[in-house]
Image (cartoon, rainbow, N blue to C red):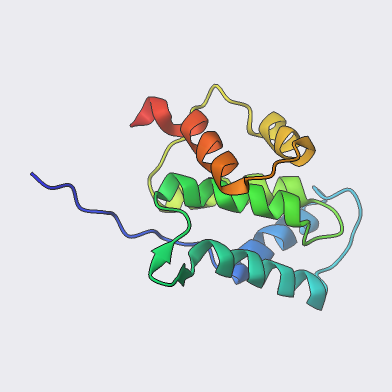
Length: 140
C-alpha cells in the first residue's frame, strides 16, 4: 500500500500576526509593542519562505520540518519587537494541531526556543531537520 503525502495545512502570515496580537492582548508579551508594517512584512517573508516551492523543490519535505521551520524562523528572524519566542512556540503548536502531528511532550518547548535563539548555525536546513527528528521521531 502506497502512503499518500498529507497536504500541509499552513499557518498564514495573518495567523502568525493574530497569535502575536493575542499574546499582546493577554499581556504575555513583556511590553506593549503593536504590530508595525515592518513586522508584518517580516512575517510575510517568513511564511512565504517556508511554504513556497522554488524551482519545483520544497525546502522542507515533511510536515514536521515545516512546523519546526515556523519555530526556527520566527525566533531567528525576529519579526516582532518583543515576544518572538512565545509567538514562535504558539505558532508551532498551532501548525502541529492543524496537521495532526504531535511533538514529544517530554521536550520543553520554551527551553528549546531559548536553545534555538542562542544556537548559531551555518546550515539552518540541516538544523531544522535535526530538531524535527528530535521532536517527532518517537511518533513516526
